[in-house]
Image (cartoon, rainbow, N blue to C red; front, top):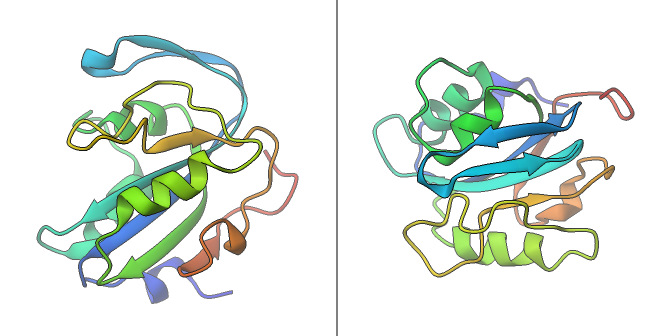
Length: 151
């Protein structure tokens, strides 16, 4: 398995971030309101077309921080990274979100989460007790950040 810094590229593209929430939590997500987030694996799909590309955006998510700028920052503040999927040069984040929403175990906890600029139901899904795997988004580079069962 490659180290995180070896696969993070300054190229622009799309990404998915897997986060583990280890206890049920009520989270206020800006204008979306307050939602009850159950324990489990969450996968968020985003894009990184600004300065620094995927390395800058995904790096920020992995480090966490105190500034709550995007919807995902609210969940990231109370969870920990479990996996990253990267696709440099691709622009089809809505297609990835649709693939995740269509998974049998997927649940949308907060409608419109991460999808304020498109027509998707959400760019965040809860996959419950699933382990993060590369086949969630098979066209992506995959990096698992935590050992299976360590939540």
